[in-house]
Structures are given as C-alpha cells and as structure tokens.
Figure 1 (spheres, rainbow, N blue to C red):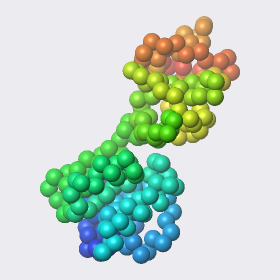
Figure 2: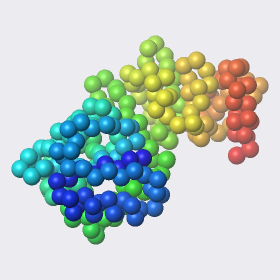
Figure 3: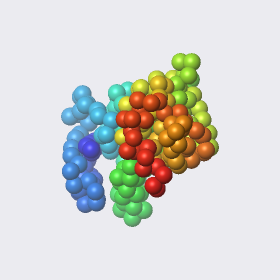
Figure 4: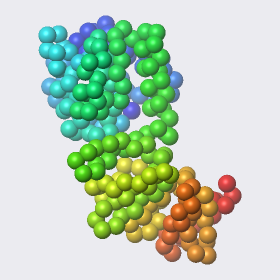
Length: 234
C-alpha cells in the first residue's frame, strides 16, 4: 500500500506523514509527500491512498482536478480530502469523485480519531470494496457481502444475502477484482467460499448462507476437493 499526501503546506504534509507512520498495521506502507506542482503527472495503483487538500493557494480546485485524474485511472484507489473547507462541497464531491473520507484541518481530536478509524477500515479485509457499473450508475460493494456471481445472457448478476443486481462487467473482470476466497465452480458461476454453509459431494452442490444451491462442475469439484470437503467440518 502507498500513501500519497498532496498539500501546499510542507509542515502539514509532514504532520500527516507522522500520523500515518504511527498507525498500527502499516509498517510496510510507502509514504510520499508532494506539493501540487510536483505532480504534473501521477501514477495510480488500485491500492493507493491519496490524501489531498482541495485548494492549492489561490487555486481553489487543484485538489478536485487531481482527484478527477486519479479517478479516471482507478475506480478503486482511495481518495481522502484533508481540508479546511466546511461541509458544503461534500455532496458534490461524493457524487463526482467518491472520496473515502473527509478530514478537516487541523488533524487533532475528533479528526485524528476519524483518520485512525479510516486506517482501521483499510486494514480490515472484510471491508474491502469493488466498484461496479449498472447502467449509467457506479456503486461500491463490500467484497465479503457477495455470496456468489452468475453470468447469464451477457449480464453478470451479483448476489448478496438480501439482494441481487445486474452489472455490465463480465464475470471474469469482476473475479479479477476479488480475493482468493472466490472460486469459479462452473462456467459462468463463482462463489464466496467464506459464505458457503455446506457441500453435498454426491450431487456436487454448494449451499450458500441464503440456502441457494450452487452446482459445481466435476472438474472444479476435483480441483477444490479439499476446500469443499472442509465445509462440513466448520
């Protein structure tokens, strides 16, 4: 993971960097400190976390423009606005850029706790999200909330315990965004093995938390034999 702090205030950049270094669980994270002028171009990885001031001196939209560039490259990189602005821009920026958090300067007291809560969120794999597209809308889904995915008639359906929705991305594209807990068990079907309840080896059926039975092909049943066999031992 890489933390990129962009602010026109050198002292404040150093302060945020010190707070990140003091947080537990990020010993191996890379921390970069930049002014806006230094980032004529910006490299973006899906695991990056950008801390951006909204304004750069008299340029009140420097951070917003940079956030748009980041978002045009990655739907998954985290953007945190750290600013002295009040709440009036939040609704606009939330819909436009989908920032992960807003922090108000100075970072102390409640704002410092918000920062550490955000970092705890990042370190908790159960809260990791992917960004999906449905029609003209984009939305985030917590990976661990997904039970299974199914590809039918050129549409991919995503099933959670209480709902399902169809998205534009292909099954393979979505699976590439997921973690090792998702197994492709048949052509056009992937399951979150952490949300499976039991397995019937005779019929090769995986029963999910919502009692849906998912068929597992013969080849996949052989491939995942140990994993599927462990379901009844939970």
